[in-house]
Length: 94
Ligand code: SF4
Image 1 (cartoon, rainbow, N blue to C red):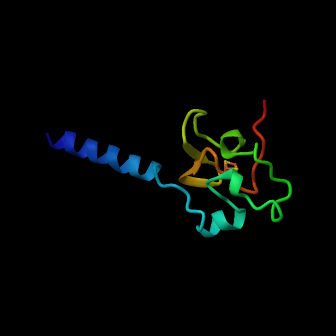
Image 2 (tube, protein in one colour):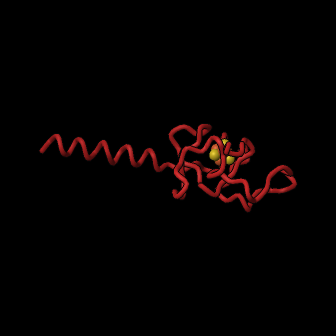
């Protein structure tokens, strides 16, 4: 019984960690110009940005294509929005 309780607490803890989304106001996110919605990116500030660019199509994104959010190599332990974008965007190969 005790073991079950410990195991389920560990699962809840790991899910909570995995679900922490990157805050746009986080200093690192702000430095990279990260936004959770690629359509809101300032075209004057980031002239190379295109609305077709988003985290789900980025080389550094580790989420699955169908997921609303996923991991990013630049934000360890946090989730970025599949429709998000930052200035470190690199088009996924292939
Ligand atoms: S590096 Fe790629 S996946 Fe990570 S936040 Fe920037 S655009 Fe999104």
